Image 1 (cartoon, rainbow, N blue to C red):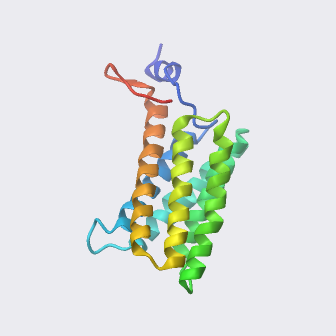
Image 2: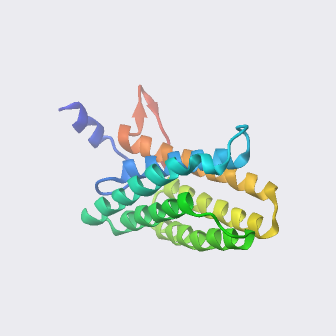
Length: 189
């Protein structure tokens, strides 16, 4: 049995029909970067510094993964990737005219993230529920922070988004490598 076949037989987390692992890696890296920069923990950086990453990795790559997933027959993962790809493209290009416009932007995308969370509730994995659920919470916190002009909520949202990014990265890593590495069994539920 080839090494690829052995890994395929050991998969206990299926992320999508064709491009799920790549899509969740792209989402995870984008959420992690955007979230960490939003916290202010890395000095002399702003969310604008993540625009190239959010456009190309979170936007274009994720949207392409969505199209591949649709073509492979995975409507849920295709919707998630295409929708979130659109979010990141818009986020990388938008410059809201007011705090209320920024808050509305976050509310609209929180509705998408909430729908994605609900879609995972019945048959989805706990990891993907966590990714979409935490992203929903982060977007709601960013919205409230924008409406209220509260930078503390923005920083909290950044931490929540960073954790969602780590979960997304972890889910993709488990999917790519199987649920055990060097005798260590990785939790997937």
